[in-house]
Length: 537
Image 1 (cartoon, helix red, strand yellow):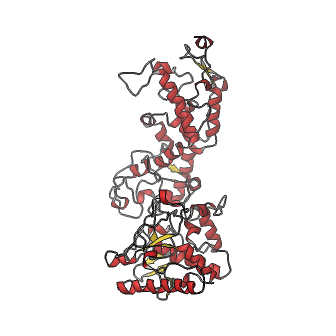
Image 2 (cartoon, helix red, strand yellow; image 1 turned 180 degrees about the horizontal axis):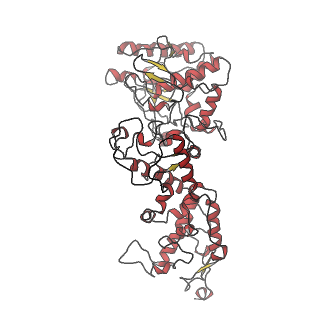
Image 3 (cartoon, rainbow, N blue to C red; image 1 turned 45 degrees about the vertical axis):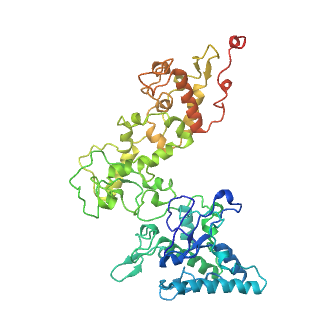
């Protein structure tokens, strides 16, 4: 149909994304923001259907869908006023006043002109608000409208609300496709995300996610409304406006989605179902006991980790790499530091939060990966000769190995934590800084005490010390900063600042990362009391 989309607001594609109500239209982010006074809209779509037949003779038409939906509602009309039922497919067509493939340019153009203009003229004749009737009023070169469209998807809360509304009948949304009979069917325990099959564009016998979402979701909402039941929105803004999304009711603690997933298991290193080209290879690291159940609560949906299918990572990402996993090896898939679906990438994102970032921003990454201590937190050593294969035995072993991980924070004795540490390297101008050392340590401990990830990795009583003493070996009496940082910067090591710069950089970075506003970085007296002798000079 020669359509285009400009989402304007960048965001990842969610499963079951509701992308407007009109099938032949697409989202538009038009005009320069400096020229716009109207609030951003989530219902802006552009009619450029005739591009399928060649270059457009006039600019495309900017169409405000919700504005038209509201006007039709006043006339006691709904989607059927513009979108007919497709008798063959037994669903609402998301094309305007037609259900089939566009093959005749003149026919399509006349359809829009006749239907739209006649409706506008009829409203004008009845002294009602009406749209334009001339070419230049619709075909505007630079429509001054700003898009605020935002994708939406099924998080755990919204999914549970739909499960409850459908009386646990998963088949209302989930289905499989039988290639032989060319029919849809439901198979319990094989439910998956819509976007695993329905992509951005229609492929062979699989309609796009846009078509799937609107033929299923909007049609269901419409049916529920017609039966006098509470239902989801029919308007674009109801799903795609950031303001409306913020008003969607959240279930505080939704029940777990059941799909035969394990509570705890060992991360597999080889695929179960597909031919494994690296089956003779053996993983050099111990296998990882993975607590699946608690991890479900840390994510909005299953696609955070299972980004291509609801299968084990090793089914696509093998030890040697496989085409089904785009040749990304298993080690890469689980350790990619900037990928949100990898273990390390997700943990890094957690470390970037204020409670953790103050310390982790100062610890060199080369040091983090230089020892095997961190590796063994996940890859728990196993003394057995061979890992079990039977599912129940795998669960038992995974639980036993996971139990060996640190479950709570270990702290030094209070008397081993200095209460005050004086820093007197600027005594010519200021009094020595009286750093409240114990108070800082206890605050860091408080922030991480109930954090499962932190407790697993903070295995030594001196682990928290590493945030400041970032290049010192773990010790209750680490060397002073001056042992590494000289009075001036190191000419042989430009990455090693002088002592004063090191103090300020360390303190300021921690304050910035943790959102600590006082003392202000520009307020020297917030930390340093001026010496009386310097004031008299």
